[in-house]
Image (cartoon, one colour):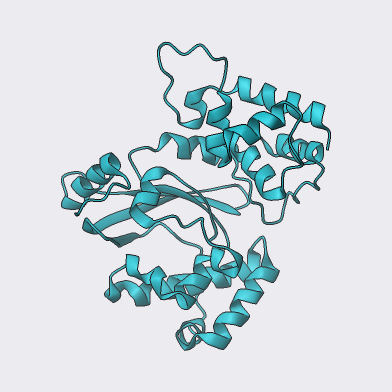
Length: 279
């Protein structure tokens, strides 16, 4: 690991960014040039002490997961991300395969969406990033590991995944998940993983087998849906999507129609966030 060059690179990138670049509020009396160390640490999901030691050339080698989080927090381009991986001593992720690195373009949009739930998905339905309102509405979908990172897998294998949606919508959602998995198998960025998920679902989920036989293929998210929030109840949302050029990542933005009860509930949720609504 090139500790000196890494420290200089991190410091330079941190000082180049402004709070507004990452969705943070910039106070009128702010004197710090760029982001503070604690702000980068918060964005990357690590302790301030550990990040500070990276800039001070005193930290052990970060894992691939931490390196990926740093690249995302600092809004690095693909070239900058690859350079960061090399400085830390890891092989850079392949450009045209599945990547955990959310593109700076999608992150900039996500950072500015504070009044609408939004999340970034891979073509394997792994959640890479969520804004606070999306977490408050849907729960932390980025916490899963293994095959369960994919919503295709969770829908048929984890009953808790369906609690967010009304039972009468389960058939439609199941068909959509099967159709998206078929699309990922034919033109996805991680075909081998899609094949493993397919094999697991064919072995363990009769429902999936039935829906798979419909031969539907679609990679769509722009549809209306109903979310069942544990405290606020039914919230009807529309989904708008933005794909990267290679369609490997998708920004999904959920909106409600102004003047509706769902819109009022979402506005309330944006204020209270994760606070408990009931005693």
